[in-house]
Image (cartoon, rainbow, N blue to C red; front, side):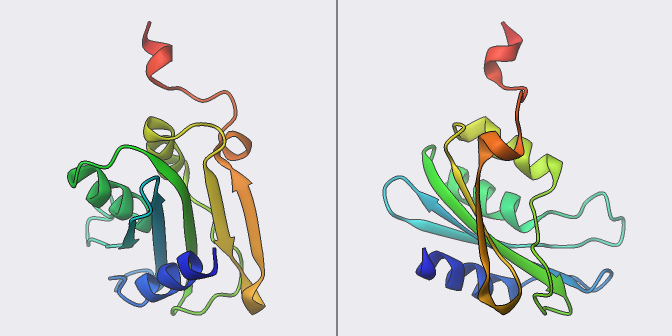
Length: 133
């Protein structure tokens, strides 16, 4: 878990956030042990901005990964972690596409505090492929 958190922290330093100044990094652990990192990438039109979590997921899926164990994330204004940076609703929904309720979401907070949640805790009663039948 410590290595995953450190990879998320390193990814935060690669964020492109010229508009909000809010830098986010994520490290996604695949079931095979490989790790994909991502950072938020902002856009002047805001709607085209991509979150760190989705950047990591999309890179992994592009490489053929489909099974995931955990994601670590951290973020803060000016790259300073002052609070727990929780995944947004869109990112939670992307996680649901590929992950079960027991998928671990590890969030780094101030003074290296860590909170861990499951996807089921953060997205109860979610919409998924089974909802389409």
